[in-house]
Length: 396
Figure 1 (cartoon, rainbow, N blue to C red):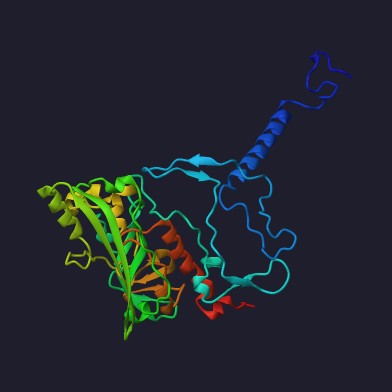
Figure 2: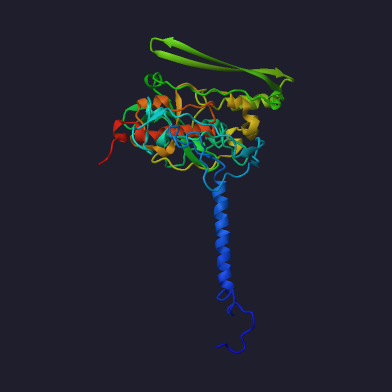
């Protein structure tokens, strides 16, 4: 029986829209919006890593790229900060060859690395070929820096300073000595320890270190603050056989054209900047005991004699980028380390002391690129599975 006073054409009235009211319409609109959002997000996450690579032994689709639903999005240009070139995505991705064999059996069987599994880049040791340039801070400076670079950071009072500590592998054997701390200048945390490997460890190295190549653009020929402009770079690599092993020497010579003599202030600034490196007789502040924690705030620049104009990112650090690291020095991520201030040791549970010999290297003495950082972390991550024979055996 119809209620008196019910308006004609209401949602609760009879007809095709019987039982539909405003809350129900809002719920339907929300679900439609949510479905569109999922479709958009699922399509956007295919800008990297797609199309998937099928199994080359798959007889059904051996040469068909797998995309799935939804399809890949249209290419989009992404602008980058600090003068770096824009990038398009999706784009042709660099494919890393896999040196492995598949376990006999049906589809889905795992791969077994050929040769040294620590160098395979598979499983927990896999890495993404990121851009081969340093991650930059808001100010355009590489984020990860060694403390010898001269920003004025120091270990917080009460924390252990690991410089001078012995680096131990998971087998408790010594691999070398900690010589510096690499910090994240954006978050004031220690990210890496720089280790000088023992000669007997470094002599077993079988991987090749990356070598920085000069950038081929017109800006490299402009005069810098010292009145010099780079007109070329000569990179020489020598392999010397000695009774104790092979010695690799990499020399980078910069060919410059001098426009004008530098001012006295510029010469003093250059001398001050180069004199802050460890090993050149500059004093190093070692302080603190206990466990390694956060880094303290940086000191004022006038106290450390550092000119911020010399540390900017982009093409302004070209000379620093072409300075190769010292032989036998590798980086160890802090998340794979345990610091024992009383024993004076830094120990990793990821790799053995002998496996420090093949830790991925870097091109610059005071910078690490995003790709190099990824390779280093991947190497230590793969050690949890491949470092020892027990790691690949079943637990049950």
